[in-house]
Amino acid sequence: SRRDGWLRRTPAELLAGAFLVTTLGAELRVEQAMTELSRFGAGLGWQPQPDQGSGPAVRVFQRDIENGSRGCYNSHLAIYKEALSMGLPSVLILEDNVAGAADEGPDAAALAAETARRALEWAEDTLGQWDVLHLALVHSAAALRLLPHTRGEGAGGNDEAVVRVQRTVPDWYGPIKIEAPPGLGTTAYLVSRRAMERVVELDASLGFTGLGGLPIDDLLARHFPATTFAA
Image 1 (cartoon, helix red, strand yellow):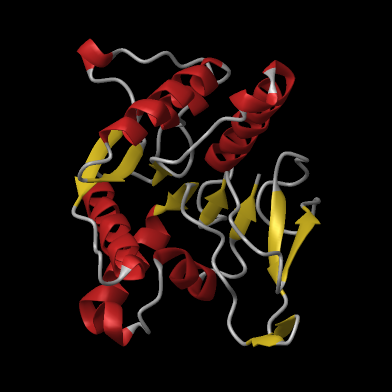
Image 2: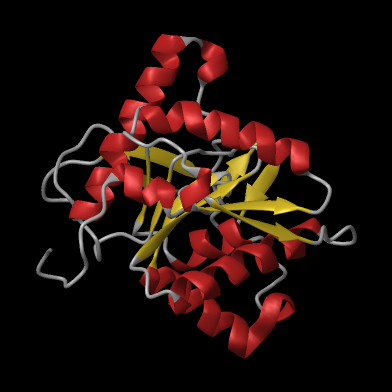
């Protein structure tokens, strides 16, 4: 146990309690994602046990053909609400395109698993001092710096597996001016209870349209710029 009252979870337990987001008709993508996670999870000390219900819980959503951003928003919002109802201090969310670098060879796969293990351990040790930890970045690199996370900068002290995300808006991407911090994708990320509660509150008062029609990662970027990290 810890002073914050939450039991410390291992990386294997975080993966076993994760949610995998997918859409109707994407069974093959789910199968491929679970195969990837089985390989990747071995580096975290996790092995799938389907008969015991151990492993990422698959949540299937209707694809929003008219507005993909809205579909992303609603699916992740539903996961937040479920995780909050379960009393979780944080939750690992994965999408069905997640990959663990297995195609890059055994050395790359092992490095990816080791980096994720250390990052997840860091997150558990510093619970309450961060809100979003990205394990996969989907970004153009505009309006963004990834800085070494050193002692005295806040959560967790020095850990080379984790970097601090610094936004540089307003910024330029070629001829395009970027006024707001862009999101970093939703392929694989850990999100805190505090962040989930805030997003649920914002949705209850403003809704998707009232929040500017933003994808969930853009919304997180705007509301938690100082407490976002990446591995």
